Length: 221
Image (cartoon, one colour):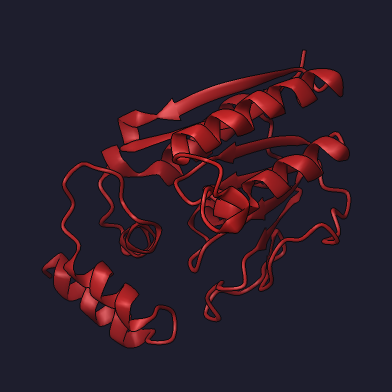
């Protein structure tokens, strides 16, 4: 079956998941090797047609496994998307432990399991950390700084991929662009990680997966 037909049938089967604008973007998108928008990426991954060299879910998941022992952890993912592609990978890795995903747009067709809990609301300063020992986010947009603040306040290990969505709205008007915002986040986080004795702040990119944005995480020991 032609992949465009697969996408069309998927969007027709689950019409509530995306807005009309998003559906048009997903259906008409052409992969060029550049950064892929989240809605497109999620559907392509769900259907198994996201090219390996552009699959940042696989890249981020591997980076997580390389730096944190996942089994037995209680993980919170902030901004899991409509389709929790990253969380599903983590869930499959867990013999014990749990991943809890926050996103108000999580698909109603995705269900909780023994090791996966879906919370269809925004992650806030009052969201319970519930014995969490790893906070993660794959481009959670304007929640990135909140994720970092809460992780450092509670001295919880974290990994977050910054994206282009940070510097928008009145609170970000003093930033020139996403790069300046990301640089400011990295500098502030590096200082806080050292002050809280959470190890060292590491900065990575996944340009090999078509992702131009930095990924930051603390590394202890």
